[in-house]
Image (cartoon, rainbow, N blue to C red):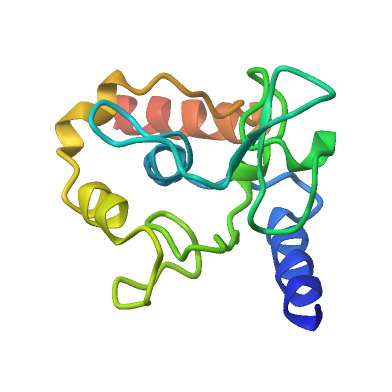
Length: 147
């Protein structure tokens, strides 16, 4: 129980007050670890919410709540967005990923580890844009272009 509390605290702290999110490639890797893709089957712990059309992890013990939904509508903060996030199966893309951990789903883990990353462009998930960061990036790009 203590480990779950610490894990939750680390995840919430990683989000910070500005809703910091993980990069898109890592989110896609997490997505594959949870939902599967192509020849990779979905995780056996993946559960459909009874309260909405979203999914949550049935292995971590967090339950079916709006803040535990793995993927949400574009612009909404989802569980897979947290910069620090642990997986009960230590799968790729998560903070506690361990390629050597004994795992009940070793075949899936190997498929994900050997995933052709050229296929990432076919995975359609979004990370909502931070308007402030986007404006700063735009200003930097203008400066670089004009120099």
